[in-house]
Length: 167
Image 1: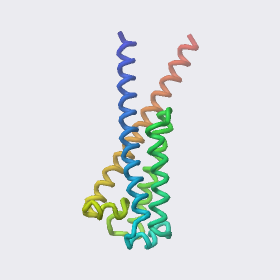
Image 2: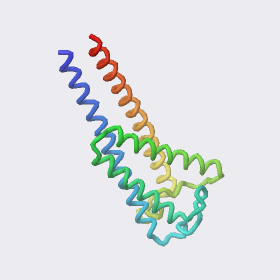
Image 3: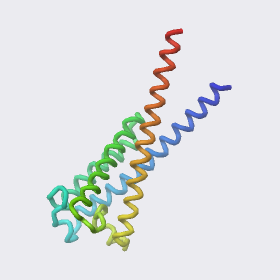
Image 4: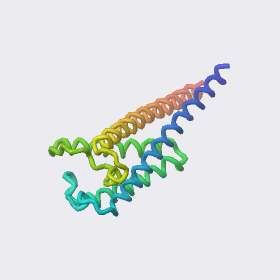
């Protein structure tokens, strides 16, 4: 009976990991498409230098869009959960550091994360910024919690394999 419960619990945990990586991948793909579309737009902000990287927002949007596209694709199609979740953790950590950098340099405007797509959809910049902060929190907390859980499961597997081997 314990073995059956353990299998069910493992199956449920795998389903939660799948749900997280699929939602993270989908969110990243949508954000990537928004950035890539914005990067070819004509908004005046695209010509301005990004306050962190000191290159045009156009180039920042393009590079970030390509990276998000790659991580989003990996979340949906890579076989290993650790790789999928690890990529989300690394990317979301970089986004968090970028946002902290904006605060440190005194950038007090909403993050132009989605470019001029918010204008096209008539979404106020502050609303888009808040939504992106919520998504960032979801990606950060979800990826690190999942990585911690995967690490614990790996540690348990090693411990139980070592214990079984010594018997």
